Amino acid sequence: MGRARTLAQVYRRFGEVDAAETSPLYERVAVALSESDEALRAIETAPARKRHPTVILAALHDLALAGRAPELAAAYAAADGDAAADAAIDTLLRMTDSVVAIAVRRRMRTNETGRCAVLYPAIAEAARRVGADAVGLIDVGCSAGLNLNVDRVGIKYSNGQSLGDPSSPVQLSSSIVGDRPVPTRAMPEVVARIGVDLDPIDVTDADDARWLRACLWPDQPDQPERTARLEAEMALAATAPALLMQGDAVEVLPDAFARVPADALPVVTTTWALSDLPLESRLRFLHRLDEAAAGRAVAWVSVEGVGVAPTIPTLGDRRASGHSIIGLAVFDGPALRAEAVGRCWSRGRLLAWLANSTTP
Image (cartoon, rainbow, N blue to C red; front, top):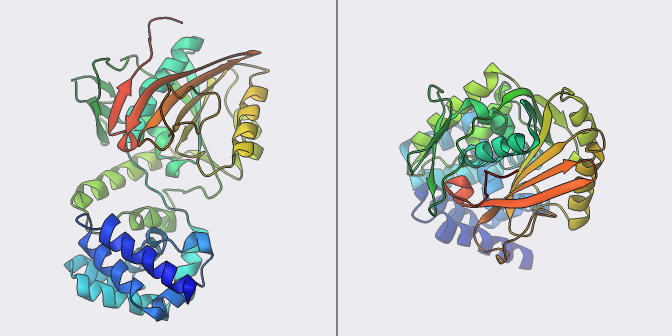
């Protein structure tokens, strides 16, 4: 009973705090789940790390989108919180094995599009510092491969600057914090797009694409806009599918580097992908980058919480301070230059560029 009460508290807090005023449907469903002993027992059949409300609610949403939970789908479509609560509990109890199987197999995908607004200028800066005319992108924890199309989206910044493709069906925006503009240098040609992940998402696969949709909350205020943007991103990614490599990044990276043409600069990107790894694994990841640089220059663009990315300066910021640091590390033989080139908030919706982009 102690574990059940703890889980009940987690779901009640999620509903009353995390979902409150953002998703009335999820607020009502989460609170209802917290009050149902049967529902809590069903959730407890999942591994502990897969019992979080966001995971279970996404799994239920996936079943609704797949047509396997029509009453829940109808309640979501009607924005009927009471009906959604009843249907969610009924679906969970009737299809416990299916809900748990989805939760166990899948990882939450936020796919915040602000990532590209942060990545574009940092990748272009990496190429400038090395003098590269082409880059091969290797995205670790690959965000469904959407980061790998960073050069094919249009980006507008609040100070009037723009980067990328103004005619792209995917148009993003980011607000500049401070008075330093982002460098407006164009990214060189991208000759390889490689995603490395334990559970890579293929946007051309119907089940994978549906999971991305399921990770969106069904009634957030900007839900129609976010859904339309996700559909446009998936359609864009499908026109130039990335090479997806499944496995632990430390083990897979050597093969990924081998897939980048010799005359291109490999640029590894991580966006909030390292925080789940222990320090030892992060250091091994760094060692892989250093090993790859024995034969040619390699760049790493990181967008991680303060102190998460090894070798990237913290600028004196405190850990868990609410923002992330944009790091740029260039490995060139025995030389390593690691710098914090910016800060960002809200997954890239706010960006402060810090680096001096006029010197080597």
